[in-house]
Image (cartoon, rainbow, N blue to C red):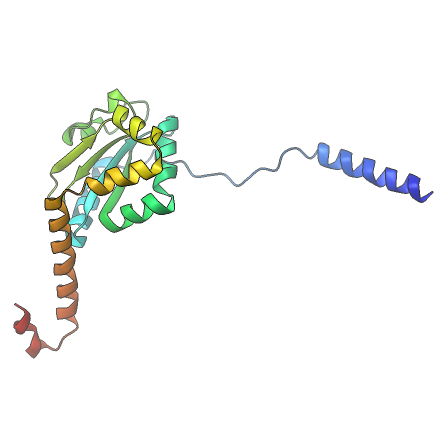
Length: 189
């Protein structure tokens, strides 16, 4: 009797789990906000980069593009994510089916029709410093995320690195000045 009962429980468990279907994970947010205003977002990022002494990374892509979604996952990984958080203000610009934000891409010289994602590195003065087209991004990603990290770390050439360090030091000094009594502030000028 116990044997029959254990078979019955096993069969019921099997059918209950077999018909329940796969376990669904919570819905993941799209990589690129299709409702965002690219021009406004870029303008805000340039202002933020200037204030914080960082560069702007404009990532042009689309949710239908597997490469764009893959690069978005790379940007959220610890190694690349920490580099980006330290050195760049990142703006993901949705180009839809190559019909949206093309004016933004053109302004920074990004050839989005060659492939996605495509990246522009922009200074806090709103100058294009570097453009990485779709084929180059695909090549970098094929070589692995460590290569992508090295590439964007090296993209901060010595002049850019010096400028970035200078801006960060200036900000530290400004914060220090703000914490000092008024009579001591002129000594730092």
